[in-house]
Length: 339
Image (tube, rainbow, N blue to C red):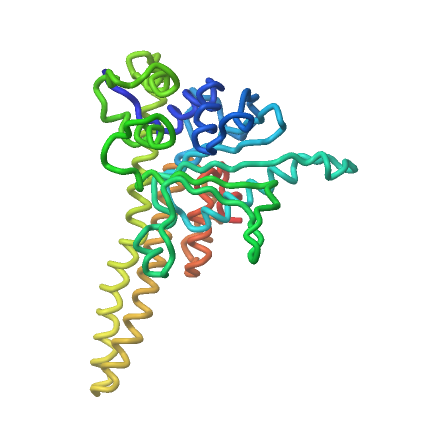
């Protein structure tokens, strides 16, 4: 048997956007809801996703649902740690919260929102936490407002949960729960059969739904297309900083050496090298970012008018280029990217 990658947009939605019992179990495990607090039933809410057979949005996916108590859950699988990711999660959660009210309605109608992000990267690396003198953030972290002095938990209307998959321990978990979900997200596509000791229930059902032998040809084609898109975007993201760093250093050394030699003095040479290095590195980074942006747009199938292309090619502002690159993920038009 060959199993599809559960982190793939198409596969994630095939399993969790069409099987509410599986999504309910995933949420109960991630949010540690048991007993009276357990989610008993879910209804799906509209999201901005295209139909399943048409593929995904490169690396961003969301499934929106509501339980009987009225709490809204926004669940996403995120493969790339782009700038502003956490800010976007907070923004979308707040938008989901405030968007419940129609004009003139009472604020008492607002119901809680929980944003759940499954990340294929570390948001709070252990080494970084240690360097800052802070305790490590666990693989599954849950966040809400806490009063600073008394540590009283309050303002629970918007809550967040992050599952950082790279923090998964190497050994397979022996018990059901969060660790087993994380293990399936990381390792399902490496399996050739369903483990015999995997008990019947949601985990086994999720694997069975990921069995490529049960995909139609159209579903297989969609899965492979989305897989290729994800691979390409991940490769480009990896190149994004490497290109700027390498090209900038090379160009800076060349320009700095030329300017320094022209002055003919040791002080001028040193100054020229320093200034040339900085200017050349900036130019190299900007060129690399422009190239990355154009390739991302092409991969995403976003057409550019000649004015838009010129605007990109003449832009040398790093912050603007970074913002445009981040905007590509999930965008459908050039206007959305270049906003």
